Image (cartoon, rainbow, N blue to C red; front, side, top):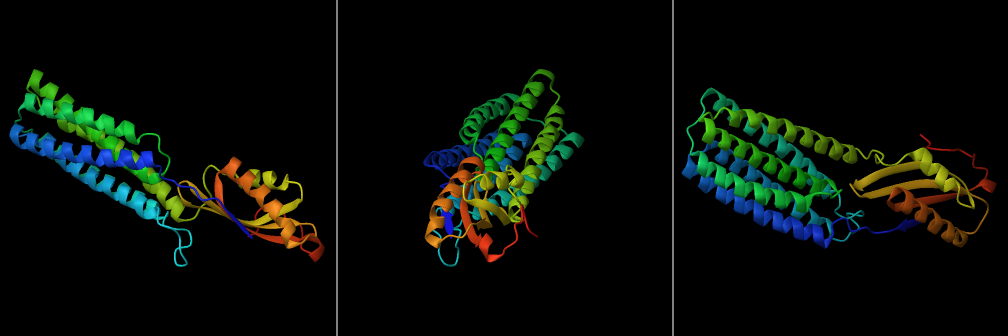
Length: 300
């Protein structure tokens, strides 16, 4: 017996924001390539490479959401939601690649700071900052890992723009370009922190671990409080993606006909969805009168 409440994890607003982010990020990439070549700024060219990787990440994110909307079938019974996690995992690793690239370029700049046109560098970086801030606000606040990965990329872009602006100002007022690589190392630390968290959360879901927001003991108490339920046990709880959670369990009840369990299924699903955001459920009912032992909690 099972109850299913289908949850659309990507709203139209999210998709529209991602499309805008792709257009904006690609535009800044083109601007920084042109500006970096004109200003002879390695910082801008490096940030342009960063932006190109982020365009790839945003396109990957959008594509994963579109594929995840495809209906389930006999071969893919949970649908394509898990693609979100693989996309987030790829995003996390691309962030690490970006960090290594920035750190490498920053190291060489420390050894031999390049001559750059500070004013041109400042103007291009300022435009990039405004666009990156707009993209970041568009992607902020989403809970699924896929969009969060895109948000972290956009945040990294914003921080890069700030660093380039700071470097340009220092170059303009002091003629010393050493600040640019120093700030780049700070950016690397921020990006690495976010990417490690993204990869860790993705692997946690791929391992089918219990969702972090759910306490199984609390769940058992909530279900056992439903009238007619004697016990819930042999619980298996996992996440299909960051906001689609599934549960299978054995439910111990009194002696009753199968049709009488329909109301219990509805009551259990209501509790699980409202208190724990679990929308995919499968229950196997057992009767006390059949001699099944009363076991609380999770059976191993």
